[in-house]
Length: 332
Ligand code: UT7
Image 1 (cartoon, rainbow, N blue to C red):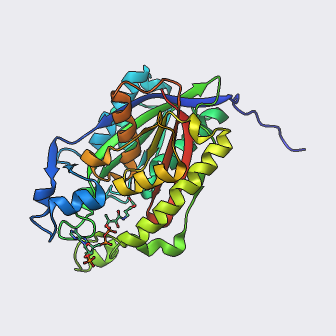
Image 2 (tube, rainbow, N blue to C red):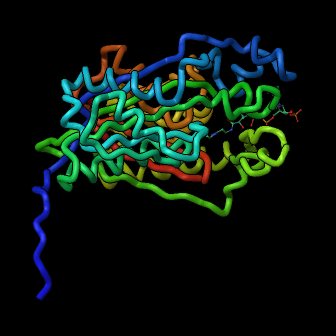
Image 3 (cartoon, rainbow, N blue to C red):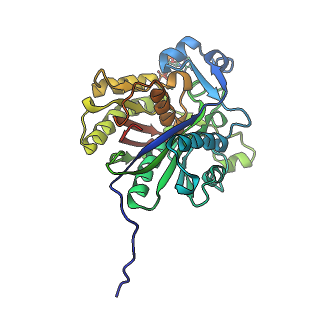
């Protein structure tokens, strides 16, 4: 006879309870980037919308920035460290293979009974982690989940590479996800296209670097990624809205990954967003911070103080691996 095992009590939904960010102190303008590449402030603003980004100093690590952002999200939501069941850290720029960064973040937060792991899904990592956090809370496997995106892209981007040097920045953003009587995180729509892994990828392995080759920098076939992004973002946006039972006109905010202002504006146009829908444009002053960009942009919109609490916001991540993910959430 098969033994019958007890399961935790399921919950009807989960939602974002609090948001926190960490922005490195050093602001870097386009002119400084142009010291190393043949470009101009005018070209960078016109082709990407970026005016400034932040670069982390030696003491601003993936772990310290993640912990600071998470601490703020926990303080805002009144979350006790003992109630955290899981810490999910989305990052593509933590340079140690093992252990992961998340256990050290959990330790800094005092979350002693939390599981912890890093999520490697590049610029869509935050949406992947949020989808998993929703499942963990609804299944009853974790009471609250701390979801963080933290990046030091300046460590993996070649400052002399004309195709990427101006685009990326550093920072961290976090949310606390906890139980809710009504669903506050909609179904996640996710996917990937490993066949096109090479369009955003490191140019060599760590093993080659060990054997005397130069540092493995991340390279990008910009125009090819751009074409893919302008197609996939509206596609999965519509699917996420549909699966959440909403229409574009219902959205209080549209918060896509902050890769390029032209991608954000093209997606907003393609979705035919209503005038009342706030569109996140944090990329202008933060650059592309990969897994950190969506919580950073969410925080920037919330700081404006005009978004309705409980209003629906559409989050859309996309990037390397050609991994992508989208979901509708209700605003804290
Ligand atoms: O976060 C993960 C997902 N990432 C993305 O979604 C990024 C997607 N890609 C992009 O955002 C854009 O492709 C970039 C912003 C990276 C580049 O913009 P673009 O409009 O696609 O530029 P391009 O590479 O097609 O180059 C256009 C022109 C070329 O000159 P010609 O051949 O027209 O004379 C380039 O040589 O601009 C030139 N160019 C530059 N000029 C000044 C390329 N890079 C630069 C530069 N400064 N840094």
